[in-house]
Length: 214
Figure 1 (cartoon, helix red, strand yellow):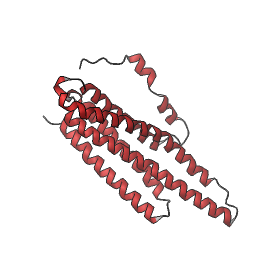
Figure 2 (cartoon, rainbow, N blue to C red):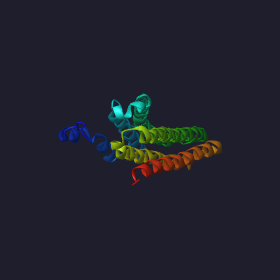
Figure 3 (cartoon, helix red, strand yellow):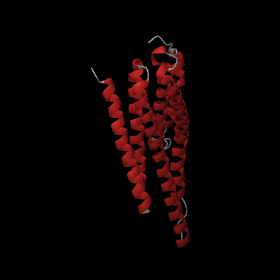
C-alpha cells in the first residue's frame, strides 16, 4: 500500500512502557489489564482500516457507515483503556479486603463482606472488558465486509486480539467466581462469559475465513 508509515525510531520509542510495567515483580497490572490492552489494540486496528478506506472512491458507498464505525471504535478503545487501570485497581481492592483484621467475630463478618464485595467487583471489570471487546470484534466483522480489502489482514489481526481480550478476561472472571458465595451472581456471570467466549470464537472464525479464501 502507498500510505505513509511511521518511521522506525518513532515506533521503537513509542512502545514498551506498559510491557515494562507488566514485567515488574508486582501482581498488577497483570493478565486482566493485558486482556483489556488487547482490546485497545483491536479497536485501534479497526480504526486504522476505517481510515484507510474512508475517502477512497472505490468504497464510497461504505463511507457513511465506516465513519460511524470508526467513532464507535474510538469510544470502545477509550473505555477499554480505562479498564486497564480499573482491572489493576480491582485486584488491589481484593488484596486490601483480605488484609482486614479478623481478631473477633465482628471483624470477621466485616472482612468477609468486604471480600465478597471486592470479588464481585473484580468479576464485573473483566466481564465488561470481555463485553466491550466483543463489541469491537463485531465491528471488525463489519469492516471485513465493507472496508479496504487491501487491509483485510489488519482486520484479521484485530479480530484475534479482540478474541484474546475476551478469553483473557474470562480467566479473571473464572478465578474470582470460585470464591464468590452469591449463587445468583455466580450463575449469571458464568453464563454471560460463556456466551461471550462462544460469540467471539464464531466471529473471529468468520473473519479468518474471509482471509483464507483462495
